[in-house]
Image (cartoon, rainbow, N blue to C red; front, side):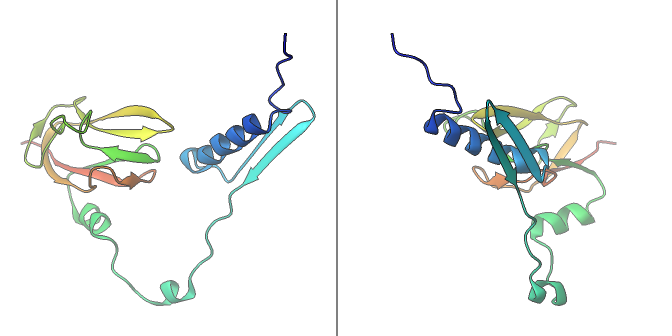
Length: 153
């Protein structure tokens, strides 16, 4: 019977663990994480991007989705996690919602895939979908505006 190697002794398991921990840093908003397995210690640190002096001095307009969300007076649904945005449950399925659709509180708006898990994102308020700010299959960041909803009066 072959002896099963501990994760600390298995280079493939260590590589997988480092990848998984690395993907958790931005998802959880952490700048550092440290894990110990036996005598092996893994410490990952994420450094903030350095400021670009040109971008700091030049006043460039915000991306369209940010400008739309900032000027909108209704409800903004934001990404609760980092991942990939999908408008439907599968590539051949109809989108959960389209612009102009009326939605109820708790209705599924989209899916965000994070670490191979499909997370259904629901609306926290009812209203009409005024704008969908992300294209299907694109990456989203935590807190990024996804949908603008006009409350029904």
